[in-house]
Image (cartoon, rainbow, N blue to C red):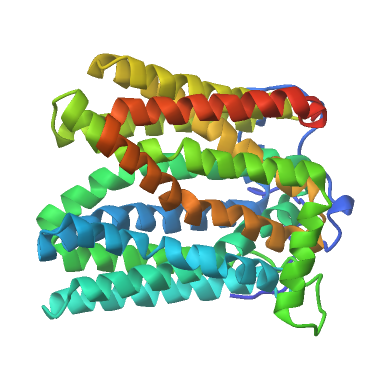
Length: 437
């Protein structure tokens, strides 16, 4: 697979977008006037390089979603311990906190395409080795915990590079659309992959599930090989990586709107996301139902997230700052209603809006950050944003403690009120965010 910038004029499927051009400003944008149009929804997929990047991401996240189910079930099957199950799943978050900033600095020093490919190849080997250990009947929860840590470490380097490469590929005018299409693909995998994982685990065996995961990671690696180099080695300094990280943090601190967007993402991670982890508490203790009811709620939420992502993809530059704030309000109000109404049918209905709110916040938050940040800092800034995912367990722990003492409804209601308060504060104080196109 050649990494040179090949001519795209010979492809009738993909119009020329100049994806190999080092200067994004010279590219012809796919978008035009502002506003919303469903004709614009899939426009970034007309860009050849983004199309392959998107397909590779779809393959990779399908494997991740399958692995989340398979790893959890296998761990519990091996140990029958909820505590060890929590330990194994937390292994993924630890390196995200420890290495994301380093991953962002590396993404601003090296060709991002190669960082992504190396990470995907390593994920392929890792999944294959776990499958082999299961097949040879030598697997233990220690292996799964170690694999979880390694996967989190790889993600700490791959994800900042994957997010930062989107801008140079599609151009600044199309970042929001491209990010929304990424989010819609992730939502789609949330809908389909868990069902595939359950069926494959039951009828093919755990080892074959991991071989399937390895195959999907390999497909992602091969598809990434079709993406041209972007030449995003903007930071060729020989200075220590620690200094690069410091420069990135100073850049965020001196960019008020970027700082606000990152802090808003942090508030989401700590206040909105814990509900996902506490959903079993609601299903068992509040609704008095079983795992099939929980699966339906997750699928409905995934459907809402998919619909929200596609709507954001259709929106051009038109009051996206207000849409971001509105998405946060929708999440807070929905969580409050879930806490107040102990009825399963109502929860199923509200899950649609929870998914829509999540999609609006996640997609627009990252899109606006990438549009505001200069290319030489994109990897480091997105690595700061990635720390939010590592901080999610910190939001779950106090929420779990409050739920233990006061009940799940009280805990989620409190988080909802805090989220609404933070969002209202941002709405009142951040005029520039309200007016962002």
